[in-house]
Length: 387
Ligand SMILES: [Zn+2]
Image 1 (cartoon, protein in one colour):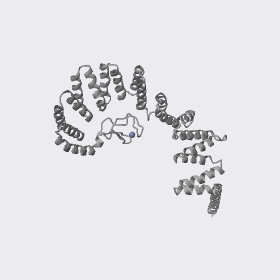
Image 2 (cartoon, rainbow, N blue to C red):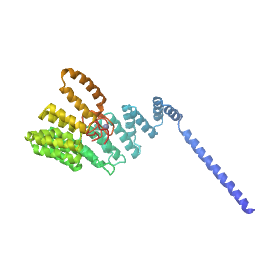
Image 3 (cartoon, rainbow, N blue to C red):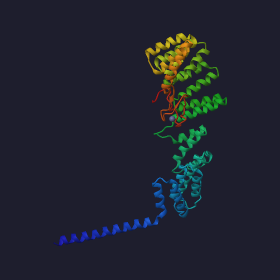
Image 4 (tube, rainbow, N blue to C red):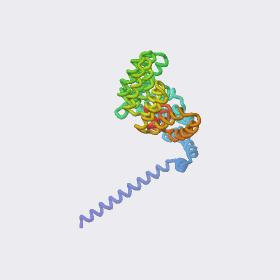
């Protein structure tokens, strides 16, 4: 009996303690919610109902009357930037930065946000200065990524290399990008007639990324421009072991170099050999043009028909129709032109280069996609949609 009575007393004590704890919690929540101004809920309501402008009005008023609300000011600054009201965002973040009592973390955060505002406004110099000042802070990595963007937009390739090297880790080595930056530097040097600097940059590109096709393409161009055609051929031939899909990019250059060395037949044999090993459509074009130029149009046409019989492709057929139309008598030509136009329309995508990252299409090949800014994302074969 005594044992059961103790249990009852203990239960009663626990129940009372639980009730007290719940009361204290509820009181706390109630007092907290009373601390939040009515405008906060009003603004929240506007936001939830997709009335962003009204919400901003209310929150701006709230921030004005409660200057201690740092988080609210950050949120507003962010919102202004997103809405494209950059000047207001800049003012908001600048005002935050001017507050002497701001905690160091908030100060860095305001600096970072302000730098983003400047970047969006196109004021790269000011953005760069602020991002650079965040070097020793928690924002360092994010700031460096934006610096890399700025340097690429400003074509400051040396600075871009430096930042990319700081950013590299096991998940992203920046090998492709750094090699491309060196190629850009090489192009700048070549334009300024500084071939030896260009040469050095290209060697650095290859040291960074030995499969950098673009470096060998430019190295060959530099050698050819100096009349060193043997060297040029050697550079371009290296592309085969780097990535043979890029060989059509060098094919016409190779033919020209062989021609200048009076070894035209060797050149023709080389590109025909490439086509036999790697039946790329662009190589088909090169060989067709070559036969038409060195032998005759009729012979080139027969050769093309034979090639298509062995390896039938839609773009190959378009090429054949093109050749037919070019050689046709006037009365047949009009009829063939209509067919050609229809086939061209239906196969337009096959004559374009595609970006594997964003799907952007272009007639020209880009080492950096103009739509998504990815490097080496364009596929080397026209009409190809994925790697
Ligand atoms: Zn893209």
